Amino acid sequence: MTSGYEQARHWVDPALPGVDLLQARYVEKRFVRHTHESFVIGAITEGVEAFEVPGGLQRVGAGGLALVDPDTVHTGHAGVPEGWTYSVLYPSVEVVGRIAADMSALRGTPRFSTSAVHDPAAAQLVARVHRALDEGNALAADSLFRLAVAQVLRRHGRPMPARSRADGGAAVARRARAVLEEDLLRPPTLDKLAAGLGVSPFTLLRAFRKEYGMPPHTWLTDARVRRARRLLDGGVPPARAAADVGFTDQAHLSRHFSRIVGVPPGAYRRERMR
Image 1 (cartoon, helix red, strand yellow):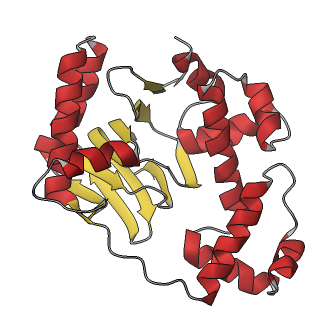
Image 2 (cartoon, rainbow, N blue to C red; image 1 turned 120 degrees about the vertical axis):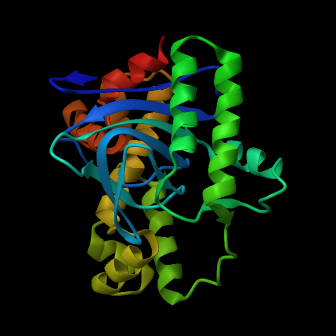
């Protein structure tokens, strides 16, 4: 995707199975509140990215890393007028888990201990992964990727804390999510969803936001985009993917897809059809 002084490419490479990649320069781009099923390791090479995570607004500049755990709500926008340029790795939970298991310094399911950090050495490793892929050097890309993830985990990782037993509000939120996941095309209204769970709409809104960092309607859009990505990965055309996940048309999908993934669905699919 190229637009004036903004450009972005979102793709996968057989050299790195289980990893999505993004190279982009953004100026006016604003990522809405969303999540990823994967980890996010973004190396800023120019400018400044600002992004919100549960801990508050973060800013990271050249030589820094933007780090986001799976299923963590976050945003993204320019932190300076000239925008930001970055190279991003999106390794799956399984891929990161395998690397963590090979490390003696980190036990258990890994998570990041920070969201924004200045670490030029690790940022350079991430950028070198992208450079090796651009050069068609699969061996170097795979080696550098493993070194980059291991270094980031060693310096900025921690085991995931044991999850406490869900309270009543969390249980309600998870049941609501299960209802929405069951039928993305025809979700109930908030009143009907709350009534089916035996709570008031306001109680449901409050519980859902506390558990997932966003209200149900925002989570639904995020979930629809996730499912659309899987369909596009499998070669489904954008118009059909839009209909299959509950968007009114391809333009509706494209608007939300670009604000979450960073590129339009057509450009995303073309990279996977190469």
